[in-house]
Length: 145
Image (cartoon, rainbow, N blue to C red; front, side):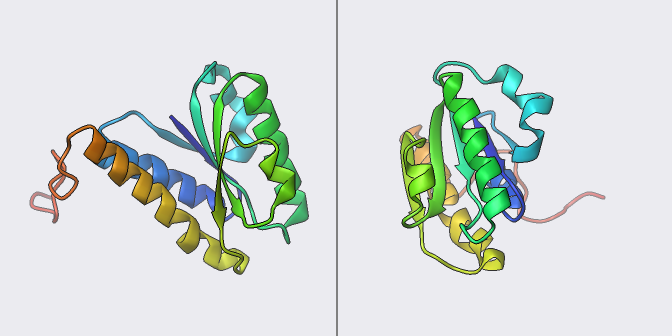
């Protein structure tokens, strides 16, 4: 499973992948969307789930580039799960699943976009029968230096 983001969406993508690894015990990777053609696109194939965090519409140049990334991913048969602002018609056509985010400032978007990714990881882990409150092999504090 892949998570892509650009600008403030990049750390969100990393967090989404990390949560999936931590509590659902699934392989996931987060990438900067601008790096898509430098490796990640080579392993995207039919049915691969790809989460894409789309920058707010006010960031037009970045927004258009991410829409282009989504088109490339879809062309390879991947399943696109897109997190974008409510009313973002440019993205809706290319999303297999659209998760609408409330409109907010660009710098607040990571707070809003992280929640559905964490909820997804939690629901998937629960569906797989894992205890999300006690993930294996994770320490709550540093015990060894």
